[in-house]
Image 1 (cartoon, each protein chain N blue to C red):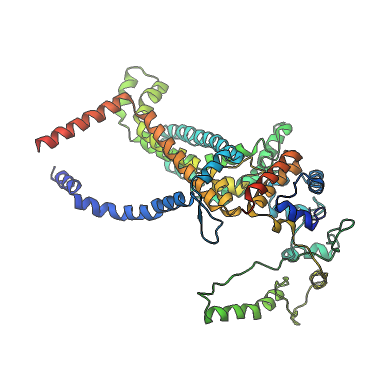
Image 2 (spheres, chains in turn blue, green):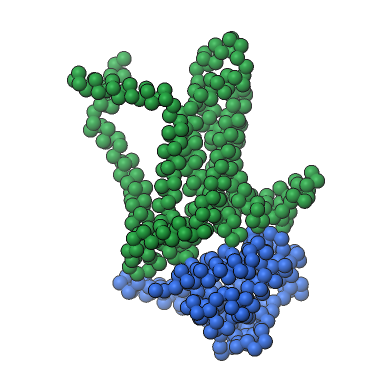
Length: 218
Length: 316
């Protein structure tokens, strides 16, 4: 989806100035529709454990997942049976292959009224120690840290870490962060139907447009 | 006789009544009544979870009756209800009747059949996900292939035509044992002299069952139907765990839609309006059920009791 959206389109879509059925929107819709054929039968009901199994057993060619599965992938990677790649970029894209949004964990908020010394201590302790402890477990830390010397990191880990360090200057926010929560829910619910051929492009366009109109900030 | 007098004394003592009822009543008010009241209040608001809710009157309800997914969820929920009630009550009753003919190992069978009720929902959902699965080939599709029905095999949870039934069956299945135990307890508590008399008069087993036993456990049938129907109207956990209402909204229930609207779409007001609708829906169903189960005879008895009570009060 990221390929066919440009930044201005998604903002106009959010503001109700553009339709999901416009030229750019239809490119994305048709892309999804075409993609459906590459997924296994019953894909909509596949859970993570099954998806991982299918990939490791060689029943599926690609598996889209985060760095938290490095440990699970290690053996097959060492045997040279699997590898990873950057998402390909579209012609005329505004960002390069190494320019993308890297989500680093889940945001945390503090309440000014209840924030006291003890909470501060706790937060500081996490900031100082979490990254190191997490990295020792061969996990990619959301907080940047020097790698501990006494742990022997795998090639796969070091390669991914290098990629993380080497992200480019620019990135575009993921398209879904521009839309309201309700439209996102409706899109996610129905994208599967669109891809499986159970919903027509027109129906999908109407659902999204109606939802954006209904949820537009008054 | 004396013991009975003491019992009557306690029942007639209003203070004793209050002492026994108050704890449960307080708990009920906080755990049931207060959340319902809050849902009703929120259903008149527009609120995204942050900041102050804005009063919008009946806007959420107006939106609800114009919402296509609401009608999809309502109809799906009714289909789910029929499947769940039919499985739970008919199979439960059948097993209970068969159990009354068993002489040995009754407790063992009861315990074994009751097990699914105490297994956590998540485990049941996982169990059925495996049964329905296509990759690796699940039990159901293996069975179909085994008996030469490969063409019927499908990915039950991803196919929009089968998903609704597929999420209903586990819920129906898991509580068969519970209803079996309730029906069994009711059936064995019947006075055998009643149907033994009928047997001597030449009634067949089926006649005894439908003309004597089942009419005699009518109260239990009403109770189980109420439990079963309100349970199915609130049905949430298994459909949510298996498909979260998907693909699309093909297996959307009222409660999964309510959850999505409130906690995924951050529309707490609209979600609350859906919650209020579920409450009203359940009340209507229970009311209709009680109506349907009250025969003219019952009504006459009630009226007579009322008249008697009036008379007694006058005498006092």
